[in-house]
Image (cartoon, rainbow, N blue to C red; front, side):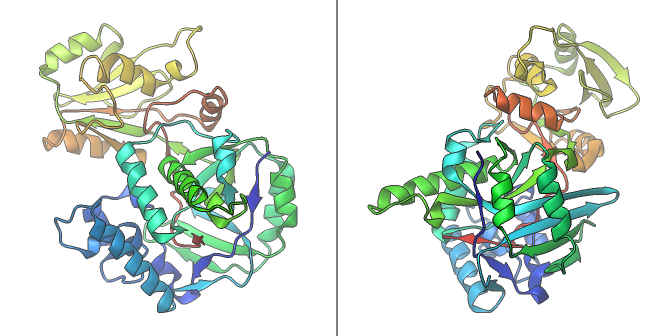
Length: 406
């Protein structure tokens, strides 16, 4: 069963939390991170994306970036930005945006649970991205951003969380994107640990690279420690665990930079062999089995219906797109490594897809219908893997509300 543990982490001094807390490192590029951190010397982006403090053309994977990240992280501890928690703790983390509310438990989880498939994944990682986070976590000896996990609801945990909401929060603020973040410390942790031990599995919703990287660092530290016991802090990684019923998934859309030598008419003809293609006056897919394509100044609906004997993963729209369009027609053999495809989070809307194509930054765009949380868990339970970037969870967790060190 699942192991969670309280930890004695670093967290921002209350007067600095709004400046420190930042979006996850992987939802912004260097230019966007530079803008978000401008005038905010305490922003954790100076650690998670330390290239923003170097020359504009700095290689984000250079030795200088990791050295700068460590320098900034140590300075933020020296200058009082971060304080050490008084005792091992769990935390309650609630996010509100519009009518949507989700509340989870912040804890550390054991890397062995990931390796033994108690914490289940549904995506492969990109080697360059995993190498980057492995090096950063190892350099800092810290998890700066939590992994986003989900689990099937348990009323006993729901009741404990509801009770914890009655206390005074450590932090309560509205971020620039309009999401309200409320954060409570849980001093009495035994009941939570006991109830999570009854959870048969947790699922990586967001943060596959962070999870895989934390596991790699843990393995490295084990190999270097002749007295390893399994309880050292490097065996654990930072996570927030949300009940599945509270989560919302937005689509994860795709743009491809060129048509792989085809012209628009030929591509449409070839796609029509696999989909029912119709020009539409709307851009967002309406249901599973619908993919929208923006090409040649028009939105087209690509409709299909999975056969009853298909495996779970093959029945996904993202798999169908990859298997019959992206790979054979557009030459995207491995979307994890190809530089010709980019993924656009659903929070940016279909207007962003149209803008990218109209501007010439991409040649074609595909808007996807969101995958359900239930389907994500079924895929994971079947030990299958979705194509990269199949899900976009929103709202995103803020990094920096608490940090796990080892």
